[in-house]
Length: 468
Ligand code: HEM
Image 1: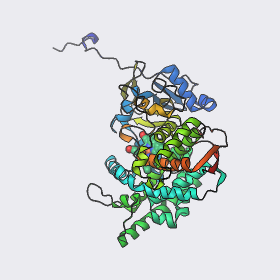
Image 2 (image 1 turned 90 degrees about the vertical axis):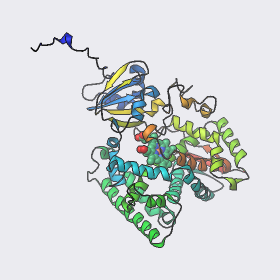
Image 3 (image 1 turned 120 degrees about the horizontal axis):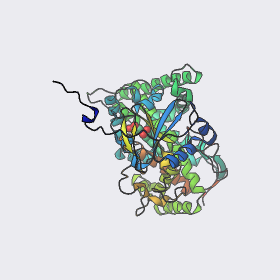
Image 4 (image 1 turned 135 degrees about the vertical axis):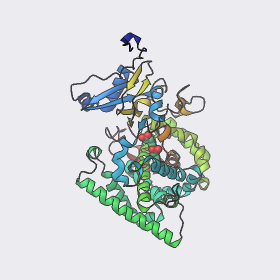
């Protein structure tokens, strides 16, 4: 006979950990008024201080769980795609990159396309870009006068576009259609507004311009690829690499895919590199001691032997490297990295508590807080490039931090693939400026642009004089 089991007969159920603590906010709007009045960064910092390293902010019906610091970020950065999804938060790029690439394709195809990126951005390939980069930089600054005042932000944007058109897009673009392609890319990326995040296909004028620009770019790159194939001409640029890439089943990349991948690389690499170059210059120009150390390093490696500049010499510029890395710590290119939890998971906070995060929850790793944690970085607000030098190595974050103490380039599965390329082009530019010019910051030290963009706000006016 069946005996009904009383509740106490059942095996003890381990209670699920509670949800993460939540910031207090007004009904419905949540922390929105606080974000409007004090700014998102300030609100995240306050809540981190109050609630610890794992907490949830709600605003206008949206809940975001923040995971601060290396201790709470392991699952966020290292879990497989089946647990933590990236495609959801980057879907907004589909109309920009186009169909058939990136977040429009299934995971296997995307992984194959990432393999093409990895191949084209590996050190053996980067070496070949040093001379074209140096050539563009010398040519560009050669056109400056003996002295003058410039908006460094605008100058660096333009120079990086020249470098990209030579190293990525190919000499056909660099030599014959630089202006057209630059303005098409401007329209394409300029088509990304707040409204695009929610309604990417709404027929607004900006979205229409974006779609026309995307179609014209595909025409241009398909034509160039066709002409190269037709004549058997092979060039040393990323366009060629992507044209010659093959999927696992032997299929060649199409013109649409090559265009999409080039746009994706520009999208990932242009504004980011420009932002970091300008912040590094700003920090050096406001820290004379570090500026002198950086200039002395250039003297050691290059003054009077400029023709020797190559990949290995750039690698040796340790102090300049640390200055760029430190500028990125203080001025990350994005406030936060986002993901979506595909499945619920438990996370332990640095303070010790354990919390359950539900499936479907939007997750954020706030670089603006991670990069300033006082138990990882000594005097975190100070620009101190040598915090990364051997002996101190604060970016290693001590035992257990793994690769998660310094996440300016992301970490884990989706860590930046262009880190080497970015350092290379930024170093080529700054190395030239340090050797050839005396610079002075004329405008006030800027704030970041706004909640979405961490670029320096407004003009960055710098006066220059050619060095003796
Ligand atoms: C200083 C400049 C740069 C910074 C600070 C930077 C930063 C980042 C960050 C934080 C991510 C991770 C995004 C995430 O996890 O959601 C990322 C991903 C990526 N970056 Fe960069 N990036 C820079 C330059 C570049 C350049 C020059 C390229 C290529 C030419 C590039 C290509 C990529 C790609 C392809 C990914 C996606 C990796 C993936 O999803 O698996 N980046 N970058």
